[in-house]
Image (tube, rainbow, N blue to C red):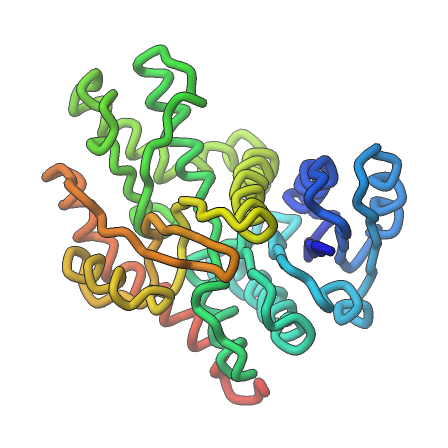
Length: 328
């Protein structure tokens, strides 16, 4: 029996993601957790004619029941209002991520943890540090979702060359915020159809795509529908690995300890980083292999030189949050 738990199931991302996942017959139990309204959403989703049952869990007291014995736990939780500062965004979401990770470590330590909560570059280290504190840490099973960056890059490149976006899969590595997002457009054949100015334009748009959504949506700090779609794609891959025993290929933000051999090749090119979003093979037990970056252009090399110092500071902030005095 495959159980998938969505923490933040009635929010801007969790709500559409719940609908997308209810359509998947590979899921036997879809568990919805939030601080409000999950029972009504669960009843509504139960009307969809797929085999999985749906349960709703409301409030912190029900978190144990929601996550217990899960195969996959999703954390799409984000603030429902636009925080005034990046610091406020971090504080609000970091508290939620920490509490959910704590429950997962206690009651479902073998689950695949899938983190979408911004800032992902900091949220994933928070989950890792909580699991370390509980002594149940497995770096092969904790993922930050960066699939949205690949969706953005593929869509924008397809626009320039008048192609079907579904026919493209543009590699995107690094992190999941601003300048840490590095599309490797040179690695796809269609890059020869783009000028350097078009490649740079696509790169800037991918790096700051979410800012455009924020501006259009009058201050809402999110792009929930596209994030839900991208996250569902990543989760479908995980389900294929877990249930069908397949080895799937994804780009995802993780602790490079998931594959020390593969990590060495990444660090040789980008520096001594703990966290990065490389190309990875994922099997039924989690990460199998981290792939090297492969051939990249001089422009992409310049972009990657910017990534290391930014990621180090963002990771440090996430780690420090968990190790503040008074926690555990």
